[in-house]
Image 1 (cartoon, rainbow, N blue to C red):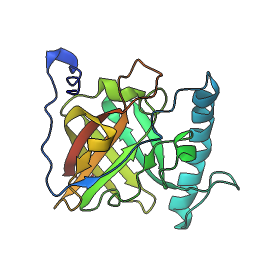
Image 2 (cartoon, rainbow, N blue to C red; image 1 turned 60 degrees about the vertical axis):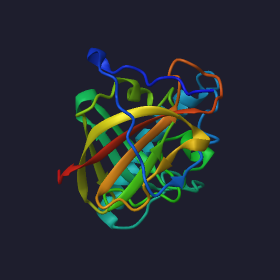
Image 3 (tube, helix red, strand yellow; image 1 turned 90 degrees about the vertical axis):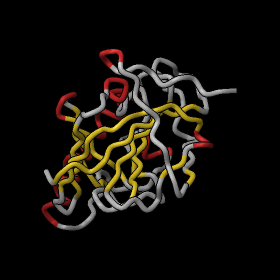
Image 4 (tube, one colour; image 1 turned 30 degrees about the vertical axis):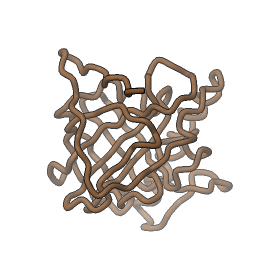
Amino acid sequence: MKPPPPPAAKGGRRWRALPTTGFMALSFAGLCLAGQGAVIPAKALLAQVLLERAFTRSQSTGAPVKAWPWADTVPVARIRVPRLKVSQIVLSGGSGEALAFAPTLVPGSAPLGHNGTAVVAAHRDTHFSFMQDLQPGDVVIVETTDGDRTSFRMQGGYVVRNDRFAITPRAVAPTLVLSTCWPFDSNARGPWRYVAIAQANLRA
Protein backbone atom coordinates (compact mmCIF):
# COMPACT_ATOMS: atom_id res chain seq x y z
CA MET A 1 0.00 0.00 0.00
CA LYS A 2 1.32 3.39 -0.94
CA PRO A 3 1.67 5.93 1.87
CA PRO A 4 -0.86 8.78 1.88
CA PRO A 5 0.26 12.07 0.36
CA PRO A 6 1.82 14.70 2.61
CA PRO A 7 -0.64 17.21 4.04
CA ALA A 8 -0.76 20.54 2.26
CA ALA A 9 0.97 23.49 3.87
CA LYS A 10 -0.82 26.81 4.29
CA GLY A 11 -1.22 28.64 1.02
CA GLY A 12 -1.73 25.40 -0.92
CA ARG A 13 1.95 24.49 -1.11
CA ARG A 14 2.92 20.90 -0.52
CA TRP A 15 6.10 20.14 1.31
CA ARG A 16 8.42 18.08 -0.78
CA ALA A 17 9.88 14.83 0.42
CA LEU A 18 13.59 15.21 1.02
CA PRO A 19 15.94 12.49 -0.25
CA THR A 20 18.20 10.72 2.23
CA THR A 21 21.48 8.87 1.82
CA GLY A 22 23.56 6.78 4.20
CA PHE A 23 20.47 5.54 5.99
CA MET A 24 20.03 5.04 9.74
CA ALA A 25 16.67 3.52 10.61
CA LEU A 26 14.87 4.94 13.62
CA SER A 27 11.73 3.39 15.12
CA PHE A 28 9.05 5.34 16.89
CA ALA A 29 6.94 2.36 17.93
CA GLY A 30 5.73 3.95 21.13
CA LEU A 31 5.15 7.44 19.80
CA CYS A 32 1.57 6.95 18.66
CA LEU A 33 0.00 5.98 21.99
CA ALA A 34 -3.55 7.22 22.11
CA GLY A 35 -4.25 10.08 24.50
CA GLN A 36 -5.67 9.04 27.85
CA GLY A 37 -8.41 11.65 28.24
CA ALA A 38 -7.07 14.82 29.81
CA VAL A 39 -4.30 13.06 31.73
CA ILE A 40 -1.53 13.35 29.13
CA PRO A 41 -2.26 17.01 28.21
CA ALA A 42 -2.37 17.97 31.90
CA LYS A 43 0.91 16.17 32.61
CA ALA A 44 2.46 17.82 29.59
CA LEU A 45 1.52 21.34 30.72
CA LEU A 46 2.68 20.87 34.31
CA ALA A 47 5.88 19.13 33.26
CA GLN A 48 6.97 22.02 31.02
CA VAL A 49 6.85 24.41 34.01
CA LEU A 50 9.08 22.11 36.07
CA LEU A 51 11.33 21.38 33.09
CA GLU A 52 11.84 25.10 32.39
CA ARG A 53 13.10 25.52 35.95
CA ALA A 54 15.41 22.51 35.62
CA PHE A 55 16.70 23.76 32.26
CA THR A 56 17.51 27.18 33.73
CA ARG A 57 19.33 25.57 36.65
CA SER A 58 21.28 23.35 34.26
CA GLN A 59 22.46 26.42 32.36
CA SER A 60 23.50 28.24 35.53
CA THR A 61 25.27 25.28 37.18
CA GLY A 62 26.69 23.58 34.09
CA ALA A 63 25.41 20.20 35.31
CA PRO A 64 22.34 18.10 34.40
CA VAL A 65 19.38 18.83 36.67
CA LYS A 66 16.35 16.57 37.05
CA ALA A 67 12.95 18.26 37.02
CA TRP A 68 11.76 15.93 39.80
CA PRO A 69 13.74 13.51 42.02
CA TRP A 70 12.54 10.26 40.43
CA ALA A 71 13.00 11.38 36.81
CA ASP A 72 15.09 9.08 34.61
CA THR A 73 15.73 11.85 32.09
CA VAL A 74 17.04 15.42 32.09
CA PRO A 75 16.48 18.53 29.96
CA VAL A 76 19.00 18.86 27.14
CA ALA A 77 17.65 21.78 25.12
CA ARG A 78 14.89 24.28 24.48
CA ILE A 79 13.30 24.55 21.04
CA ARG A 80 11.43 27.66 19.90
CA VAL A 81 9.39 28.41 16.80
CA PRO A 82 8.97 32.20 16.96
CA ARG A 83 6.27 32.50 14.28
CA LEU A 84 4.04 30.00 16.10
CA LYS A 85 4.99 31.27 19.58
CA VAL A 86 6.15 27.77 20.55
CA SER A 87 8.75 27.16 23.28
CA GLN A 88 9.39 23.69 24.69
CA ILE A 89 12.03 21.85 26.69
CA VAL A 90 13.53 18.72 25.10
CA LEU A 91 14.41 15.70 27.25
CA SER A 92 17.11 13.09 26.84
CA GLY A 93 16.34 9.41 26.48
CA GLY A 94 13.50 9.01 24.01
CA SER A 95 11.50 6.65 26.26
CA GLY A 96 7.71 6.39 26.18
CA GLU A 97 7.59 7.68 29.74
CA ALA A 98 9.61 10.78 28.85
CA LEU A 99 7.32 11.45 25.86
CA ALA A 100 4.41 11.93 28.25
CA PHE A 101 6.16 14.98 29.69
CA ALA A 102 8.04 16.62 26.80
CA PRO A 103 9.62 16.18 23.38
CA THR A 104 12.60 13.84 23.52
CA LEU A 105 15.89 13.52 21.67
CA VAL A 106 15.79 10.09 20.03
CA PRO A 107 18.69 7.76 20.98
CA GLY A 108 21.26 7.49 18.20
CA SER A 109 20.73 11.10 17.13
CA ALA A 110 23.52 13.61 16.80
CA PRO A 111 23.77 16.16 19.64
CA LEU A 112 21.49 19.11 19.01
CA GLY A 113 23.29 21.91 17.21
CA HIS A 114 26.25 19.74 16.16
CA ASN A 115 27.10 18.24 12.77
CA GLY A 116 24.82 15.32 12.05
CA THR A 117 21.09 14.73 12.32
CA ALA A 118 19.24 15.24 15.60
CA VAL A 119 15.76 13.69 15.76
CA VAL A 120 13.25 15.06 18.27
CA ALA A 121 9.94 13.22 18.73
CA ALA A 122 6.77 14.13 20.61
CA HIS A 123 3.04 13.39 20.76
CA ARG A 124 0.83 14.97 18.11
CA ASP A 125 -1.92 15.89 20.60
CA THR A 126 0.33 17.77 23.04
CA HIS A 127 3.82 19.17 22.44
CA PHE A 128 4.02 18.65 18.68
CA SER A 129 0.45 19.62 17.79
CA PHE A 130 1.99 22.75 16.24
CA MET A 131 3.66 20.67 13.52
CA GLN A 132 0.52 20.80 11.38
CA ASP A 133 1.06 24.57 11.12
CA LEU A 134 4.76 24.48 10.20
CA GLN A 135 5.67 25.98 6.85
CA PRO A 136 8.81 25.89 4.70
CA GLY A 137 11.03 28.77 5.77
CA ASP A 138 9.93 28.73 9.41
CA VAL A 139 12.78 29.27 11.86
CA VAL A 140 13.37 26.86 14.75
CA ILE A 141 15.86 27.98 17.39
CA VAL A 142 17.58 25.34 19.50
CA GLU A 143 19.25 26.38 22.75
CA THR A 144 21.20 23.73 24.66
CA THR A 145 22.00 23.57 28.37
CA ASP A 146 25.56 24.69 27.68
CA GLY A 147 24.24 27.96 26.26
CA ASP A 148 24.82 27.30 22.55
CA ARG A 149 22.11 28.48 20.18
CA THR A 150 21.56 27.30 16.62
CA SER A 151 18.94 28.59 14.22
CA PHE A 152 17.39 26.12 11.77
CA ARG A 153 15.21 26.84 8.75
CA MET A 154 12.45 24.43 7.79
CA GLN A 155 13.02 22.78 4.41
CA GLY A 156 10.07 20.44 4.02
CA GLY A 157 8.02 17.62 5.47
CA TYR A 158 6.54 14.29 4.45
CA VAL A 159 4.57 11.29 5.69
CA VAL A 160 6.36 7.96 6.09
CA ARG A 161 5.85 4.61 7.83
CA ASN A 162 7.75 4.36 11.11
CA ASP A 163 9.62 1.26 9.90
CA ARG A 164 10.77 3.03 6.72
CA PHE A 165 11.95 6.28 8.18
CA ALA A 166 15.63 6.83 7.49
CA ILE A 167 17.99 9.76 7.90
CA THR A 168 21.51 10.79 7.05
CA PRO A 169 23.46 9.88 10.19
CA ARG A 170 26.59 11.89 9.36
CA ALA A 171 25.36 15.12 7.87
CA VAL A 172 28.10 17.64 7.20
CA ALA A 173 26.06 20.37 8.91
CA PRO A 174 23.61 20.40 11.83
CA THR A 175 20.26 19.00 10.73
CA LEU A 176 17.08 18.93 12.82
CA VAL A 177 14.25 16.44 12.32
CA LEU A 178 10.92 16.78 14.14
CA SER A 179 8.68 13.71 14.14
CA THR A 180 5.17 12.97 15.36
CA CYS A 181 2.29 10.64 14.54
CA TRP A 182 0.02 11.21 11.57
CA PRO A 183 -2.77 11.99 10.81
CA PHE A 184 -2.94 14.89 13.25
CA ASP A 185 -6.67 14.62 13.92
CA SER A 186 -6.62 10.96 15.01
CA ASN A 187 -6.07 9.36 18.42
CA ALA A 188 -5.67 5.85 17.01
CA ARG A 189 -2.35 4.06 16.98
CA GLY A 190 -0.81 3.62 13.59
CA PRO A 191 2.45 3.24 11.65
CA TRP A 192 2.46 6.65 9.96
CA ARG A 193 4.75 9.50 11.01
CA TYR A 194 4.91 13.10 9.89
CA VAL A 195 8.53 14.22 9.58
CA ALA A 196 9.73 17.81 9.20
CA ILE A 197 13.33 18.56 8.30
CA ALA A 198 15.31 21.75 9.00
CA GLN A 199 18.87 22.74 8.16
CA ALA A 200 21.18 24.94 10.20
CA ASN A 201 20.65 28.54 9.22
CA LEU A 202 22.85 30.72 11.40
CA ARG A 203 23.97 31.16 14.97
CA ALA A 204 21.15 32.77 16.93
